[in-house]
Length: 235
Length: 235
DNA sequence: GTGCATTGATGCGCGTCATGCATCTTTGTA
DNA sequence: TACAAAGATGCATGACGCGCATCAATGCAC
Image 1 (cartoon, rainbow over the protein chains, first blue to last red):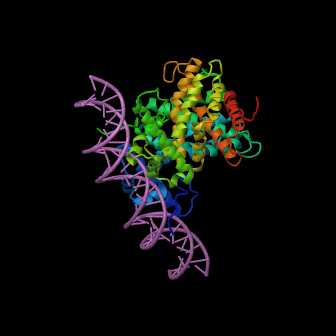
Image 2: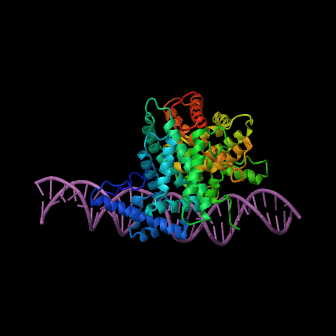
Image 3: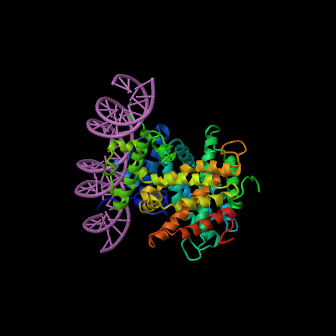
């Protein structure tokens, strides 16, 4: 039989795409994750060095020492491989959110989750930021980035519903709040990150997390207190 | 010299892509708009009939009686041509917003603008809805749709800043409110439209504008009154 | 440990995509 | 009417994305 690794083409991207924190399964699964990671890192590295447009899928596959054909078993396009780091980050963001105490207001918990993810200093944490910078430099990736975020809306919405003891999205009694809140929060995050990257780009190398925290607080604060009345920095 | 019609590849999409309401210029410009419209309509029509994946760029070009090469002078991909209607709708949405009296609260004006656009019953108005339905049926188009909306955030943010007499985004004194409000509003619109289409899909043919209006009001209301306290239908 | 079924990796081939380049045609204007 | 600018078209080409057949590694039962 043929090979059907991708969980469904674009849907692979739409359904996550990050490393699913494999629960210590067999060697098979581990190797798959390794291959995926190798391709993801190769794509990111080469794209950062030469620019996304100047890198071919073949080069990425060679760099990762994987057959060209195999690349397409994992990602359906170059762009998808590059933003895979972001998908992973988004999934971790949601995991962090789920771990917050339910006594925290929703947006507060979201804020903490974001900062937790951004404060990671390990290899993966760096990749998130590097991928974001790359997206800023390559307009081709913008649609992909947006799709990655949008793909997590549903998951975050469910987490939010759980967090506040609200009916899950689509269930009877659902006010639509969880989904709206999730998409608004992720959008705000995207806007803030974009601004932050623009400023950080020309300044210090080590990501200025303090500045990011302040900007996130501002945005979250505006979302929390209602968008119909502008201009308030610290309520 | 070569041909450089597109205002800049993907940026064409990112900077709008709709018909710029040509100010009665020469025949040259009129013909360009006609060509663009022909391609846009052909792409939409064929995609609706056979599915986006089953339509080639060549078929679209043939249907519009345009050379294949010329197609790429207007759109850099099949998907871009299909969602061009949405770009036009988004631009008109902003135009409508700008026309609202400044006495209206921001989100109220946004609501009115949305309903105005959705109530259009002419050919273009139908195209908006048809394109939205197509996107729902073809995951490939989702990234493009998101990009179209995101591309209008800046424009809407500026309109909002004007509406309330706030410094333009990036200017000194900018609180970040206009951009956040714009992106949140557009996101909410996207979420609401998605839900609405899901429901409308299986029901009446003539778009149920009343239902849409109610759903928009709910979402806008939640945005307006703050996202940190859930569950309120009619404040 | 051996054999079998499953699943992923790889090679091959093909149709499509997307763009650069050269050329021809149309349009606007002096 | 002649000329310059701008768009449309044809041609050629490299990359893309995937179906299909095959090979190899893995997991499992016995």
